[in-house]
Image (cartoon, rainbow, N blue to C red):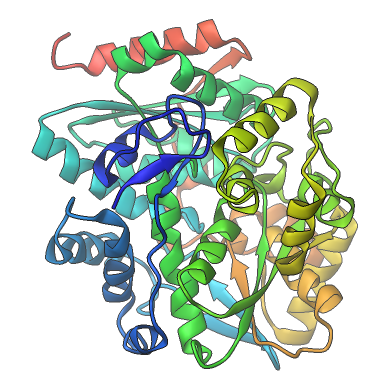
Length: 469
């Protein structure tokens, strides 16, 4: 299995190199050179398997000879052993044909654990084999940071630095990052938005001397291994609801487009996912694109669903590459235009192709509170603000209930207790392992949106922990 960059100027490489590289040198994102496709018989053979086994069998399609199936199975078994639900990703029925896929039973209460608990172990496996050390840098709008830190804390061959937008995460999200005092962990609160944090991370990766000196690696969903590790839970849900003999739909609260792209990848592998609903808050660039081919960035506005407070959805580049017939020159041209002008003139044919499968839905803060209240009142289900956006999208965009819909329940309600309490009068409690979170010591550095200062902090952290220091 080889991987190519969406911008075509980086040399193709294998899974291990893609795992460690994250972003391609040309600024593009890696995708499989060819997509593995399963037959209906092969999909049926996966029904009923434990989640760790299903995950290993599907992800192995993407690793080539980098790991044996037995090696990968050992990693997935270890990654998901500590999840709080025996099913790992249980389906909860919310309506006749509406099913919440609960992705928040991992250690940090969010769907990012599904990929990052495995990613941390993949890093360990590859680095031990190569005798190398890396510095992970990542940007987070709230959940990726804590999941990445939890997966990488105290690992001998990894330093990790996470950037989050100062004051723009929930308190639970922030504390889950900043109260981990392991020596290989550093947190930076950037005076700016998530998009600013994401741009800083990308800038570090395209700064070749800095990238090489620090041996940078990525945990954001720009890293293909993150996407590969998210495909299995859509397969698990679809198979549970009758696939491949029954078509399904998915509804995903979407910010950086990685989660919904993983669902699209499952379709590309042969699962009959017939419709993709994209839920958004007031930062609705993806919805405007789908409604009117308006891919234009606007200032990021804080909301009750901060993990979607994004205007630059990095993983959209992967879908764009596919919509443009895998043309790297055209993809690079489109992305460079977007970065320079803040607007992407997607060709009409590509836009229309996208609208055949994807539909967008926007929900403001009052609507989000109303949906959380409705779910609790009518169904007895307590949802976080992001999940509520996805459930509301189903009722608006698919009211006929023709297809069973998999709703990505992306975070535990206790990660957003203030919003849930405002909507329902109930304040969700943190699980026992996090019960003392608000009394733990925090450690982080506040820095301006300045690449030089950020790089200096990353370098100081990595050098302090270097075996050569």
